[in-house]
Length: 97
Image 1 (cartoon, one colour):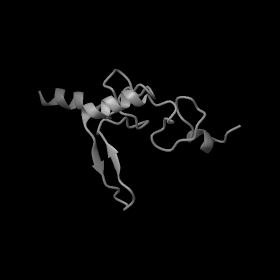
Image 2 (image 1 turned 180 degrees about the vertical axis):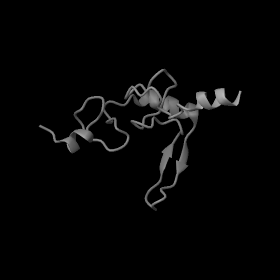
Image 3 (image 1 turned 120 degrees about the vertical axis):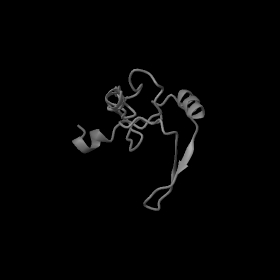
Image 4 (image 1 turned 45 degrees about the vertical axis):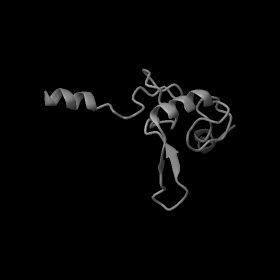
């Protein structure tokens, strides 16, 4: 039986493979779809502020699982209804009118 820490480090899709970030293992990622989304949004390089190795992002990664969001109602991988954390934007726009 996995401990809480071990369970927290398992893929959120299959719950079998160990992961860090993104929270989806290589076996469960739809590589073709993620590649197409990345090409659509464009990739850019971000340097690690702690001096480590940088990483490539699109700016459209889900805040919960780290996978590129496809623009649907929810994140395809974790089901987050607000994967880009834009929940308050609609309220702000209404207040400005």
